[in-house]
Image 1 (cartoon, helix red, strand yellow):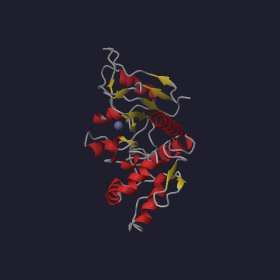
Image 2 (tube, protein in one colour):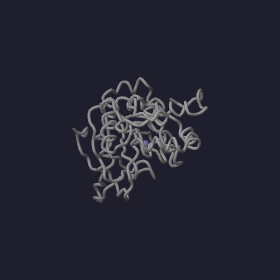
Image 3 (cartoon, rainbow, N blue to C red):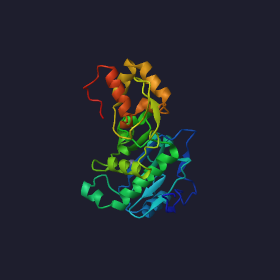
Image 4 (tube, helix red, strand yellow):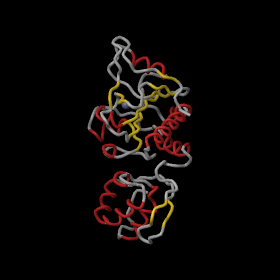
Length: 265
Ligand SMILES: [Zn+2]
């Protein structure tokens, strides 16, 4: 069942022109979260996206404590994260980036609805429920905030959703909603490249820095290639970092002298 409770099309009411555009064939690989920084309800935000006096901007959905409103159909590119727009499904939360942890905690409905939306879009898009930061958003596949686009792509100045935004809690809840599954790796059996025996991956979300992955790949191309071939991880290994790869990392650990070095898990 969809998390959408209402639809408010992001269309300029004076011109009738949509405030969204074609994705140009781009594949969606990011779920980007924003804060509205003014509007306190999905209705107010939706009205702004329709207001002729407003700038040409939009988001796929808006989320508040009580509703999740669809503004832009998912097949189109919403206009809220500059050049990242074509590759993203995006949500504006009725919140402020300056909120404290206590202020976020006072909006359990908003947080739960956000987790539901993230879970839903991750499933629909085949996007793993892992957090991407900064540069990782340029090529990675996962969940991030607008600030990661600002820093990673060098576009704009927006810092939402703020330092206290509980993104890790939201991702953890989304995994739980999807059945304790990150939708990519759960219960997948891959062959242990060291023992040659099949093993089932644990579901443990963590982060392995891209530079570490690059280092491992440089040292162990054959091993990594075999692990990739033996699984359905495909290109995910290129960008992520996930603790769902704990065993894989363990095998690499044992097969190299990297043991004892911090792998970020
Ligand atoms: Zn934003």
